[in-house]
Image 1 (cartoon, one colour):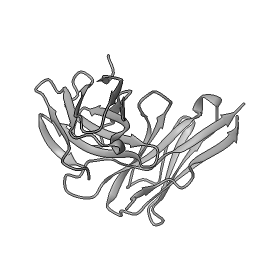
Image 2 (cartoon, one colour):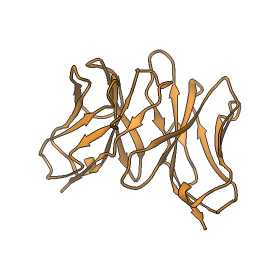
Image 3 (cartoon, one colour):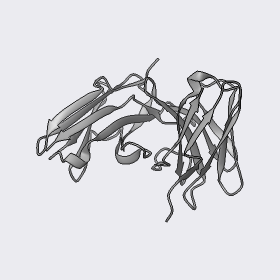
Image 4 (tube, one colour):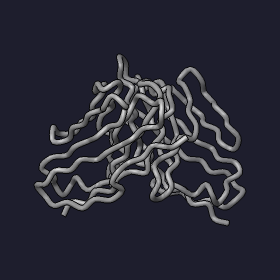
Length: 114
Length: 114
């Protein structure tokens, strides 16, 4: 069974640009969550999608958005990039929306904003 | 406001000895706690979890203890092995309603020396 895949693995952008990251969950998993990992803040929750609906949202500005498609694949978009957006963006999938369901993480996308 | 705290950024132990990683939380509504392990260039992998109705959960060399009155949990690894060297994240969920998002600590880097 293939794991969670994220593309691209590495990305370099400049301030003001926008970026789209992609996540393909494990087959059969319907929930996808996104996290931002930075050295100073650890793992911070961005949002969770289930059946194409955003179910939870973390404390991030509106520049961060996401969506989920009917095949459970998810994308997150960051507009007007800032230097502080440089981070590892992790996607996790689970069978259901409850965290009583184990979350499986992808390897992440390393975003560098110059 | 950091609701899940891992106050030790790093921990070093000898192979064969016990590793104890600690985690404190402030939100009394949290009712489910998890530990994840992360190797460099990989996403976090689920290790072990515990529900708030229990005070101990054991899985092989890994045991998690929960002290609800102190809002404290710990992960014990016995015996520690060099392959256990990784960053360990404590996470919690709950908070009432449909709040299933995971709140992570900043992580503790465990180094097991041969």
